[in-house]
Length: 286
Ligand SMILES: C=C(O[C@@H]1C=C(C(=O)O)C=C[C@H]1O)C(=O)O
Image (cartoon, rainbow, N blue to C red):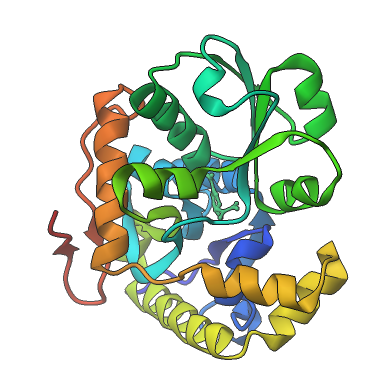
């Protein structure tokens, strides 16, 4: 029998995921559900502990907990080239950072590890990393460079800060020729087993919400302007540049990232992505 307890759904509080969430309303679901809106690091913890049952999280955190999670089909936050909201701010070019100190935002998992991969594999640099609250001035006070993501990165890039600004997804694309997936949607395996109908309803609602969101960005653009600032054309360009799909292209880029992360000891295990489906479990080919 279906377990009828509340399903807890995780929402990324950054604007980058709004096109998937804007038309997603937990109160309209037949099965009882509640949504929590948090920065990725908090959602990652909840998904790994099982206190959040389904929703968006850092792709790196999915990999860490892949024995407990299944991916929801065709949902992600990805970029095939510049992402425009994952920036390293530095006083000298990245290649020259050497053994300096980089302050990294404590809200991220994917981008922090992407930075480590790029620094070591692309530049042969081994800087010291310190985790910090996402505050450009405070971070630059204690480090040679800092990593910000999401709306913190966008707002800092609008400031007249005078640092060199490097887009990590652009660098990844230049270096590998592939796109990068920062967030995925996943479901707790036990929740998928205990309440298959509730999870199916949520998966379907996400798919529908994404379709509506990307085909009508206007309300999302207006909400971003009034919440974060910036112009309509800025946000239109920002959202259109991102991809919310998780097809073969995105999977190829993410598989390579997972391989490097495993090789560098950032991930404890090699990752085989498994995608939830209502009836059967499908394994993604590499
Ligand atoms: C595109 C972005 O991707 C985000 C980056 C994440 C990370 O680094 O762990 C997690 C979720 C994504 O929404 C962004 O924050 O700008």
